[in-house]
Length: 487
Image 1 (spheres, one colour):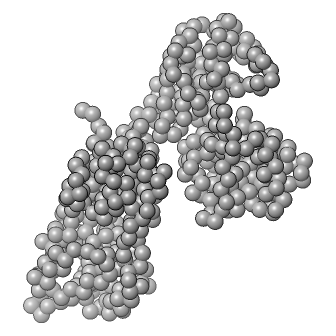
Image 2 (cartoon, helix red, strand yellow; image 1 turned 45 degrees about the vertical axis):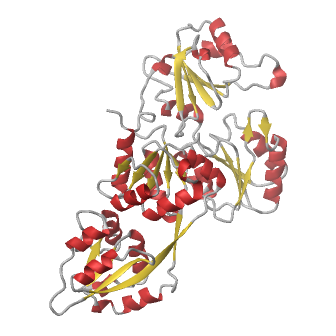
Image 3 (cartoon, helix red, strand yellow; image 1 turned 90 degrees about the vertical axis):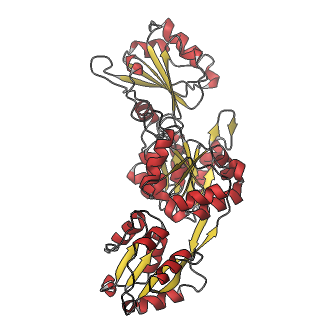
């Protein structure tokens, strides 16, 4: 098999190349470093072995020699190995050393370039590395020089003389020395300079100053330092997003988290996925639902109160034409949209996305009566059924799925406690999160999807900050933005 040296990009998981993502999806072993985005590891197959060889300042899990030996060892075992490296493998990343070790050992390898932080991080910081009339070139140089070279072997006078923009990687520790060398080489003290830390990530932080004053600010690794007129630019597209700098906890089931979490990340949030419920088969294994579907023609109405109910039910419907003559009702736009994916348009969607609103909007049964199939969670309130029965209907309340609590990892629980906001999409998610982390660890901003969830949160002692309107994921997202918007 082959060892693939894959560039992970600078941090934003969306910046990995298509080829890199493809290889991760087929990897048996992933050897990754500290700068790799954790979300990228989820692209690997469930059974893949993940080996963290990340290096932090002053602490190395493995030496570079040990990493090379590991790659050779796994390559010789015939495994498909992805060596996931931050940025680009051949831009100050020691990928060439790993390639040389593999070549010397006779192990097949390939290099998959990545987007280098030298270009991407300034761009995310609103800084173009080139600009007409002010900077027609840029030079990339490492500030992390060989310790054996004493004062360093970079000719900073020559670097300065190239003009244009200077992009300095891994230069925080030596910045006072580097700045002095550039000043001695003739760079003006008022030359704009900027440092972008954790660039392309939700925790990105940009410091803008001058060559003479950047060192007066607290600089931390990992940062990309930019020196030149372009460093004064503030094309603030990334840090200006509405949820930038906010950490949001998502408590939906793992299967439902991805799209919502992705939307929040696009808006700038750091997302903590802490699913508190899991959705599984009902206690009878779905027998009652399958039996109801077999006699679906005997029902006048098919009623859904959630997306889960839709998905579980349609798993048993081979052809939507069996619904001919059956009207369909849905609580909430999300539920209606789930129906639409199966090419079914809901006949009834109440204005308010709660079960009682459906009961209020539901037509009375005809004189001869009629049957309603209600496909929902195994444990659910009785009010909806009571209201429909009061309207003359015969209701078959059939369990389509069952929800259960999910244990929250202690490390995730600690992150939840430090977050800015939490989103709840059901009463169960509220109760389960409090059981898992405690009421005092719930983030200060509480956003709920609707009045039922809000009521449950208040009963359990939480103050609800915002409630979605409409009561949907889209509405929840907008409510969350509103919670952090300052007039």
